Structures are given as structure tokens and as C-alpha cells.
Length: 386
Image (tube, rainbow, N blue to C red):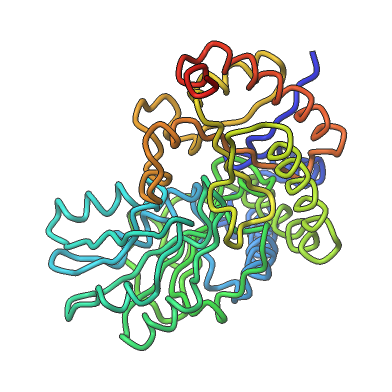
């Protein structure tokens, strides 16, 4: 059976170039980057080269990068590292659970959190950020691109509001890195999170940009690794892979790779809208990252669609991988104002660099008949048809 993977917002395959770069560091080049002998110094040099590669992807200095185990740790380091009891945090209702659940824990510890609403396209109104400011506001944390819809937030404008108020601004850029250009200076953020496995790096790797001069309390205590911001022996192979993936991602932003990805996403989207009735694109009228499409198919349960398509060889999802198995509709889509039944009828298609035009053709060949079959079994669709 042919299998096509269109769930790249959940995770991406490690590219061959990335795997090749990592391989030596599982064997002969195994040193601890904190050791002063030859093996350690060779490892240290490799880590610092990777740090510079990741920094170039974000437009910052290498010294401002803190390597982590992924986006969740990076988000947690930003929030718990900057917020104390009594502080006020502004975030949104559509953040990834790495931010939302961290904020709920901060509330339990005595911090105050404001969860901003979004409009029907899933966007934050910067004026609402300004209106939510208080004397004790210390941090604004708003994601750059939504993991379910791909909608891109006005982070540069939010960054200016935070700077004017002299408060910290963190953005979760896990779903933006490698898909759209990122310049931390233009955004004006003090902290920014990324995760390697979202742009063809290895799982278990990530980084937090911390603006020079920003004092952040570590989550872990031990050695003086990562300039005392993240204790623990560096994941040498993972960091090398993250650095190589960052180099490939940066190259792809300028050589037409990302533009070609966007074209295939748009072809998939337009073909489905033309061939299937009672469908629509969530956040379809706002700028999105080029690989993501979130489409509702009325009168069908999303989980049933995922299972049925998987049986035909197509992997898609109903939303965030960390929420897989949840019986509640997507918190992102309901925050946008979608009724629960439409939120449950939505599928996320997310492309990666490995996907080909032939794979999109295959996806189109199986989606429409699968939807038609499931709707034949749906009493709500039969009633609507009458």
C-alpha cells in the first residue's frame, strides 16, 4: 500500500543530510563538550558551529541561543524563568498547551494570567494586548504561527507594544521556524522558542533565544552548561542535527523550496474546495505558514476521517499531536468561534519538504471518495441533503 504523510506539523522526517551530519557523533566523535581534552574540545567546536547555524536562522547572536530538549522545554524555560508570584502574564486562548498549561501552573503559584480572545480568523488584536496591560504585567507570550491553522500573528506589532510598556515579550515560533523568515530584532522579542523536529531535525532537540541582557531563571540546576541557563550535558548528536536542519531551512527560504511547498498546499486546498461540498478553510483569509491547511468537512467526525484516510494510506490529523485522543473539540477552533460540530469536523493537512506533487495527487484521489462514503453514513448529512 502506498503511504503518504501529511502530518508534518506533528513531526517531520529527519532529512538524509541531517542524519548524515549526526551519524559521526554517535560513534567516533562522542566527546563531552565540557571536557578539556581533544575529544571534548572537538565536541565543543561542533556544538558552537551548530549554535551559530541556529542563530543565523533567527537573526541573532550565537551566545543568545540556549539548547533545550524541544519546544515544550523552551516555552517552559521562558515562562517559569521570567515569572514570579504576583506577576501578570498576557497570553492567548489559542496557544499550544506547552504555554497554556505552563500558564495555569503559574496561576497556581500566585501569578495572574490574562487569556486574550481571537477573531474568526484566529488572530490576536494588538489593541487588546495593550488594553490588557497592568502595572504588574511582566510578560506577553503570543505564538508566531498557530500549530493547527497556520495563522500568523502580528508579533512585530505586539513586540512594539511590549517594548513601549517595558515588559518582556516571548513568542512560540515552533511552527514558524523554517517556514517563514524570522528576525528576532524585527519582531522585538526577548525570548523565542523553536523545536528541531518541526523542520526536519531530530526529535528531542530545540532552542530558546534569550535576548542579550535578559536574566532568566533556569529550570534545571547542575553544571554551568549553556551559560548557566540550562544545566546538563549537551545532546551532542541532536544539537548537530538541529544545526544542520537550521542550515537547510534557511537555504529553503530563499531557493524556492518553501514557495514550491506553498504551491502544493494551495493546489491541495483549492482542489478539495472545488470537488467537495460543505467544506471551508479555517483561517483561510489570513496569512498562514506555507505548509498548513485546516479544512472543515461538515457532517463528519474528524476522528473517523483520520482513521478512514489512514486505512487508505494517507496520514493527516485533527489538530495538535499532543491532544490526540481528546474527546473535546479543538480549543483553537472553538476559540475562533466555530461551533463544536464544525470544529470536530476539521482536518489539518501539513506538508513537509519530503512531499512530492505525486503524493498530493494521491491524497486528492483518496480524500473525496472517503468523505463521500462517510457522509453516506452520516444522518445529519442525509437530512441536510433532503
